[in-house]
Amino acid sequence: MTGSIKYLLAENEIPTAWYNLAADLPFRPNPPLHPRTLEPLGPDDLATLFPPSLIEQEMTSRRFVDIPGEVLDVYRLWRPTPLVRARRLERALPTRARIYYKYEGVSPAGSHKPNTAVAQAHYNHRDGTRRLTTETGAGQWGSALALACSFFGLECTVYMVRISYEQKPYRKAFMRVHGADVTPSPSSRTACGRAILEDQPDSPGSLGIAISEAVEDAAGDPRACYSLGSVLNHVLLHQTVIGLETRRQLEMAGERPDAVVGCFGGGSNFAGLAFPLLSLDGTGPQVIAAEPAACPTLTRGVYAYDYGDAAGIAPVAHMFTLGHSFVPPRIHAGGLRYHGAAPLASALLHHGLISARAVGQLDAFAAASLFARTEGILPAPESAHAIQVVVELAREAEREKTEPCIVFGLSGHGHFDMGAYEAYLDGLLEDYQHPREEIERALAQLPQVAGGR
Image (cartoon, rainbow, N blue to C red; front, side):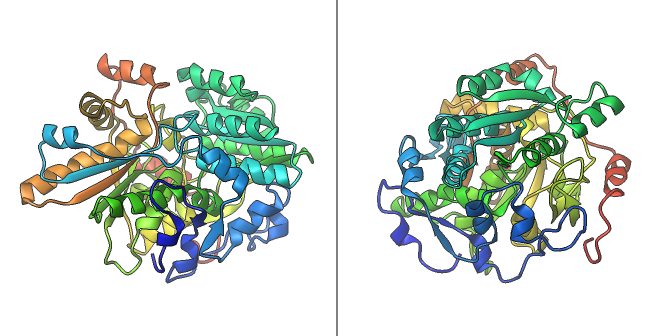
């Protein structure tokens, strides 16, 4: 990252501006495309889904975007979040590495998701939106948006991936407490949902399917806009409050990170932590995205143009993808079950500025259990993937007799995921890796864009 950010954050204060990585990139990412014409997308093309303020942020070239006072007032309910030295985990491994985690589970929704949910609700309210539609996987994003909508007086409709809807009833209850209408996806409420149910009545759903339903719902209601919890530039922008705080907290501790690790589904938690800490000239820390082996977008996908949703009605992005028709298995890290990846993060991986590792479900839960027994926090299954990569790095450091500083994002707590932990402890979980032919079948349906693959 170029330029100074010290003026943004004094001790124990919240950043007053978000950081836009796109302003500092040494290359120009390919633009998103219209889903029907496959031509570059313009601001007017997004007007049926997003309010003007967020469209402007999606396309801004400014390095810093001021955080509105109304958003800061809500952030102060839980920010700044703690950066903690995991000394007990270090001793348990054992390792010479110094391990720190940035804990976002202290937010009212128990995850990092309110950082953008509050911002999106604010801008939608300011621009005259009355209702927001969205999708959610594990329920973290739906919980955050329901919370944010209640703060700003907006209606909220959530399409929740069916398998998570069944596995995590208390997430659904949390959303309903805050006034949201929650529907399992695929559903009979939308044309795309009905089409999928007709073809596969027992579909477990996916984030791609739920996105299709939420987009169709919003596009058909002039009072409504669509809200996305990951992937898009403005979402990643809002999450950089995490990394900006972390950078200042590390300075206060006299540390410089050698490795930065974040779990990766669509990319919001990863980007929020990593973007302000990333060095674009290659002199900074090693930055690693930890994803599930059962949904290996970054490690087994291709860098190509693809639809952001299953029905092909959302914008087409240049990203790492497994194919928009890809339906991942019923793993318990519901927030990581997405076929694509944030275009900005995808471009960084394509240019070799970050790396990715795939983690099996059993290894992830073993690492999470170790973390809970040593640090006293039960991690969300999504965060468990990052913890496993940290364990690997720490053990590598011990073998090599090095003393790196490792920082990772603990994106949320696992209090709503006890069913998953119980299944793990009872030996009912298993690892799953998709056969290559299944991935190739989904990739064969990519849109035909010149130079896009």
